[in-house]
Amino acid sequence: MSGDLKLNNVVLSYANLVEPRTFQPGDEASYSARFMIDPDSEEAKSNLEAIKKAVAEVKEETWPGPKKPALGPDRLCYGRMPDDDDRFPGWYFVRAREKEDYPPTLVANYKDASGKWHIFDRDTERQEALKLFYSGAHANVVLRLWGQDNSWGKRINCHIRAVQFREHGERLSGFAPVDADEVFSDDDVPESGSIADTSVDYDLDDEAPF
Image (cartoon, rainbow, N blue to C red; front, side, top):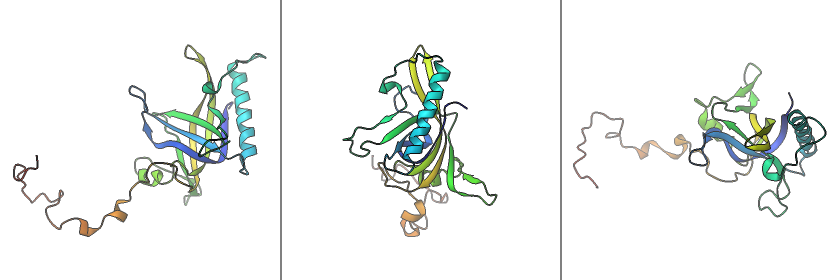
């Protein structure tokens, strides 16, 4: 399908792939990420050629004929970082977003007993996925570019279809999810009087701190 794009060994940035997020009041929650391409990586040439091909397909499908609209950088989902950028000097990128109702498939870097790539279930494997799909991790991604031409203007946008964890990298921001079994011990909780112990009758008026 025109606009389909597969990139290998990209670095995740501004990654919100496990849970949808709202950035501005009134906005719809969505999944999003910026996929960074190291120009010195082995995959850079093939990744950039894949982007060029997908962009050409989308432009021809959306604006057929010899005349194509001139789109500024703010109207494109791809580009190149400034050479003086602190973290990604001169790196290329594709930024993408997906609606909450269409969560991108999260794929592990190993296969199940059936011989198929393991797909993370956001309901039962949320913590495991958060440990892998973070800003700084390396991944392979499947995207879909599409052309916009309506009352909101002309743009080239990008959907996120699937993200495969490739390997760990330097975490760029935020905190790693806490593994409760690693940071808490049995000594941290009294043997009785816990929230789960319904046999203890508390009077909230006694020694109330407020």
